[in-house]
Image (tube, rainbow over all chains, first blue to last red; front, top):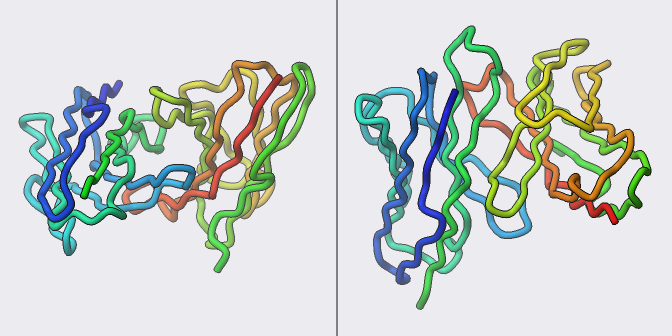
Length: 113
Length: 113
């Protein structure tokens, strides 16, 4: 099975950089996703890591280390609109049963002026 | 494209009532799933489908039924609503077995009294 841990809440200042960590204990997975969810809205896709290393997309970057069971989402030049919950999720290996996402409980990020 | 459409957006039920949450997607995605989201619990998988006529249980299937008669539609049925089913429900679809992003509907906020 999969057990995914994220900090419950974080606060950061507008314009700063914040790193949201995700650690997992799983027997194996195909890839790791990050989703953003604003209050009262649906989750939206941010990034997907299959290989170890850093994937950069504008102000957002995501890192994966399979050997350490660890991922992080890095948000640069924080804006007020980045206040949201950030969800880490894994997808299992082919043939490992459910082909659906398993989510962590999410990290609520508050950006303050 | 409408993407993933869920109806209704809000619903109040009395204990013991039945209802169906509707989910439709117009992206010809094979994979569809239902999640519930509760405070402090994150998104939990209820049921999923890997194609028309094929469904399977997720992490929290009790009290819910699904069917998938067409590629487009994946309704979720509550046969006898209980207060424990008060939650926000999200339907999601994906084009393959999860190696690309999932698209979420806007959610149904259900209250059972």
